[in-house]
Amino acid sequence: MLKGRNLINTDDFSVEEIDEIMALAQDINKSPENFSNSCRGKILGTLFFEPSTRTRLSFESAIHRLGGDCIGFSESQSSSTSKGESLADTIKTVSNYVDVIAMRHPKEGSSNWGSHYSSVPLINSGDGGHQHPTQTLTDMLTIKETKGKFSGLTIGFCGDLKFGRTVHSLTKAMSNYDDNHFVFISPEELQIPEYLKIELNNKKCSYEEAKKLEKVIGQLDILYMT
Image (cartoon, rainbow, N blue to C red; front, side, top):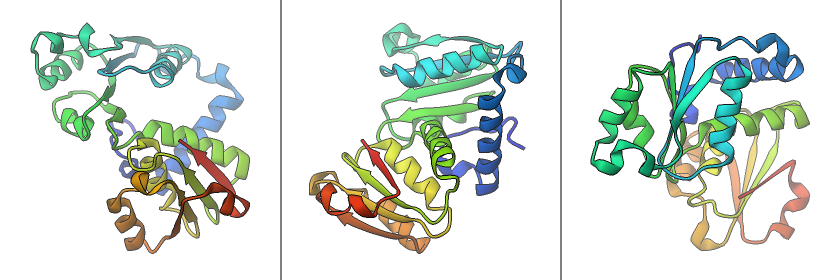
């Protein structure tokens, strides 16, 4: 069902597909040895145009644990874009060498734009302050394993909600499940973007905004700090 698909935004996968991914992730966690050759003969290309520790190394670790290999770069100065090559040409070239690309770029929308130049699936590993869908899938697995469900939860987000791409992605994903209530805790200058409020209103999701964590923490099932 998911083979050959890009992962650019949280909305790229349906609720049913996310549930399928969660089930597979739990199977891998339970019996990793059963999946040690799942990606044998496959190569992941990591195109990281801005610094990353956890995201880049988690991708590299994952492909190796699944029996595959990895090539790529960890900063833009290590690529030909530093010599004037366009992002489109870089993606076109690398997609001839690999089976899937994981890309991080500081510009919002870069992964969506870049996917049109790739001949292999492209995974958004963070595009500016926009989205970070693979982090969202990891966060959802944590929620599944600790709460056992994705519905009927009161979820608090605290910190930089304006530029926090992980907040944006997780909010969008969890808003697809029933009876969740969102509490956005931040100073006024770092409030959740207006476009997300519009999306929540269109989905008839309930939410509230607060400036002090101590006033709302008692009602939360989950607290997401950023």
